[in-house]
Length: 399
Image (cartoon, rainbow, N blue to C red; front, top):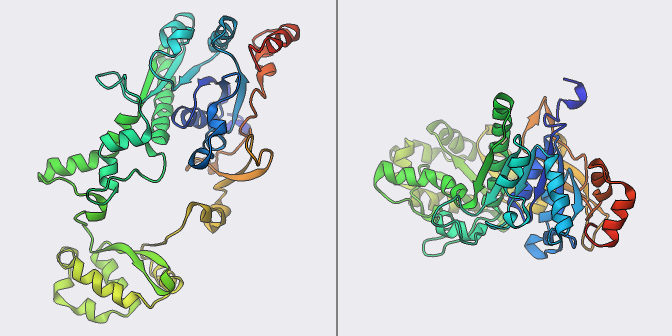
């Protein structure tokens, strides 16, 4: 394999995506980061995710890097025909619209596969086919009905996780399915449909708690009130109101913990000799530790834990990660130019996929695209002359 392709194993693969929000774009982003040419088909006025405010303002620039943008009015017959023509040139089509939407434009799997038998079609939905498939799903909806919000919040206070876990992981699983389908296509020469869903992803995430119930007969308690398997595994408020997470999850770690903090009396206490004994004494032990650590500095504690090889973590906010020395040293952040919003055109840092190929992270080849930035280029690749493209643009079929 040529050196230039080492970190682009999907180079030469064409993906056409009809996606918005997070789940579908995540699937396309993974394939794009792996080297595929990913073409984002947007409405003539753009993916509405571009215009979200507040917690949604980071969606588009985060999940649409390394993609090309073409804007097509699918409501116009000639626009839908263009989209179908584009799909006929694709290896993969991905979509995450409500059931029935793609059929209206002849862009469903059955229609496209009849023309392109090698096509792999990734559909990202709220639910896999079944009694719930007609429902409108959101990450929060499936977290509530799938037990994740119950496990995250305090008893009686269900709380969604602090990021779009199901949307992102649903997209990851869709991309995983596409990769498997590509391998299978290499054997059979035929494509297939890949389906991924938010609800089923959420159920997979809480599967360990379901299995806990199956094993013990005892329902899993929400994490803030859980039966913790380790005695020292908690957040401590220390000097100046700072917070730090400290843990000792084995007897050897407990010994080191007491030694480095100068708690010889706790180490000598018979009822705290083993982890299970300490778990039985957890409320009393944590109260003692909180009192003793309240006047210690977070930086001092972090230094002691670091030197002893004990697990610890400062409590940080997402924006603090821009200054994280590990991410900066290892290339975990990369530059992208913002395509929309009040800071359009400015360069900021984005996070990369959390793995390496041949020792390197998968970087940013294309900034998140401005709406329709590649429309002409892509239509030319389909054989359309400039005069026809100009006419389509004048008629607002494409932008």
